[in-house]
Image (cartoon, rainbow, N blue to C red; front, side, top):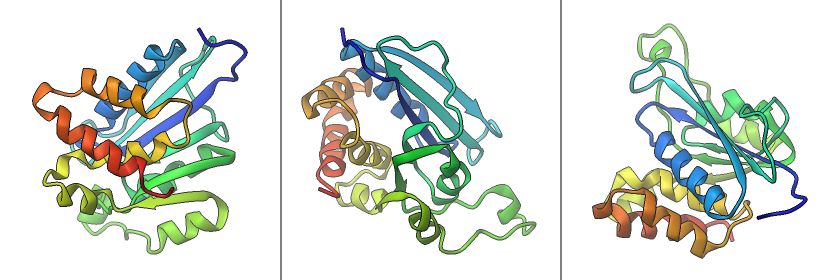
Length: 195
């Protein structure tokens, strides 16, 4: 068991169908594997593909509340640019945003009622520490675009308290058996970016 550790707050944001649930399961499993107390909480916008999905993962010696307050997130993992912008204010001073350089138009943009903002990542970089990753392109290079979320998680892993071996062990236990190797490969790609 870990002693005298301040609670860490991780937020995972994206849209439905991007693998936020699997990512939070990996992270939750990892914190338990490492002997921490952990609380997970999910907030769904529209409950279909394309709706906003937010997951809070809090871990430490003893965690009481599952919700991360504004200005408290150590790491914000964003699978889509607009979601990164929407939730950036949750980041604490000195925290880091890992943002997947992907654009998924929300319904108001699709129907023409709103415009997708330009230069999101550049604007975020003016106020926050941002690590950008084109995880979809990296995932396509290894032949499976569905593992892009694990590539993003690999980048985020560099800013958390767990060993590479711990991550790989928990990924192996969490993902479907037939996808273990491709997910491990995806994690390694992310883990070695931005070093």
